[in-house]
Amino acid sequence: MVRALVNSGERVRALVRDPRAQLPAGVEAAVGDLNEPETLTPHLERVTAVFLLSGYKGLEDTLATMRRTEVERVVLLSSSAAPTGDLSNAVARYHILSERAVRQSGLGWTFLQPNTFMTNTFQWTVQLRHGDVIRAPFPDVRVATIDPDDIGAVAAVALTSDDSGGRAYRLSGPESLSPGDRVAILAAVLGRELRFEGQTSEEARAEMSAAMPAEYVEAFFRFFVNGDLDESEVLSTVQEVTGRAPRSFEAWARAHATSFR
Image (cartoon, rainbow, N blue to C red; front, side, top):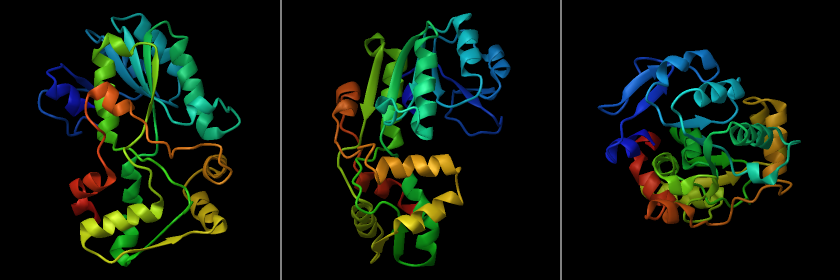
């Protein structure tokens, strides 16, 4: 998103926790933390539009602070799960509540509700270093994964255009793929004979439980095993908002091939 804004000639101030963070030339670094709303106040001067992430502590306080400044609009990175309205699902809940807080803030708003990111494929790098077999959960679930650069491009438009006010954009990539499909594409890009093996539900639950809270594990099983969430539909939103088609998984994999070698 920052690159997209800079490329379109916008002045950008980027919030970072680490002042040593690498940013594109001409971007002003603002050191702070969304979990600590008081750290944002010094950086809001001359800011008219803000990009926010869901789920941070004190979001209401952050928005109230912005309301007292020159900020006119907020673009919130939400989730494909938010439209379900299911507050009993832990993952959907924090996105739904974040959207609610932004709606009630009195600021102009746009919500981005993307599918699973293509960059989640980086989870496979460890397996690729140790062999040619990729094992992953939910083997039969097809998802139109999206390149985060396409989310950033939509966000850049929403931050700078009045046309996006009061809209929630569901975002997808250009093709619906199973994990096995993505492995096959990655194999062709890398020139390796890779093989996909789907994990059983028991194996997936055990592995995920070692990496995230139990309520999040349950949330993902409800999404992709119970079928509470469908991310298989290919949507035209990226094309409509940005004027260009979203990047394919193959193109994304080629752009990031060195990370998998």
